[in-house]
Image (cartoon, rainbow, N blue to C red; front, side, top):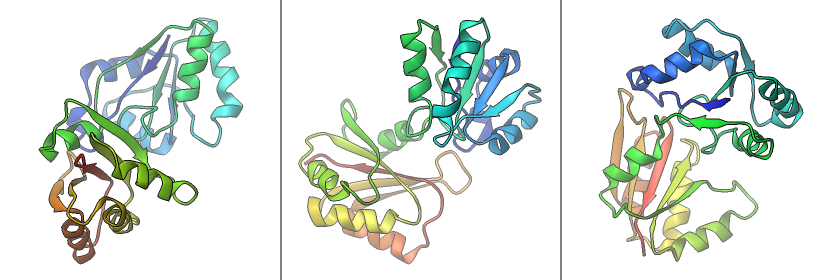
Length: 220
């Protein structure tokens, strides 16, 4: 069995009882960054084996973990925060497990874009999740496509590129396009800023951006 285990995106109280139980009982925990996960394990008194599993090594170690699963081992996959495989490593492992008829279960839990969409006030019965935009090649093409989207659009962005991203969106989507930007969700300095793309870009030019950002863009 492969367990996909979400971990808190900020407030540690968002960790579920079931997630703690699974991490204590599996044979091995695969972590995006073992240093981050070890702090989580220490907080919840989880004593277990842990190995790294991230974008730079997942191709190399994939077969080893698949063999362990086929031999009856139980493995939990976690990312640094939120649900694995959502803009984080995990997709390759899940796909390979499906190909090998290895049972998978994904625990419900924290992910950043759901509260951000709900707090935006935009229609959220249907929305498009874009994750992180390409940093260079293909970026402008994606933004042009987003500009024509008839549904609410969700993006992730870093504090270093948030202002640039909002200005690029304004260039192609129109300066008056409505946006809601949430940062540090569930943490002490959680903030959601709503307005036009120009207004919100100006806000974060005047206030140094910190934390992880979720951009929720209104439909055309």
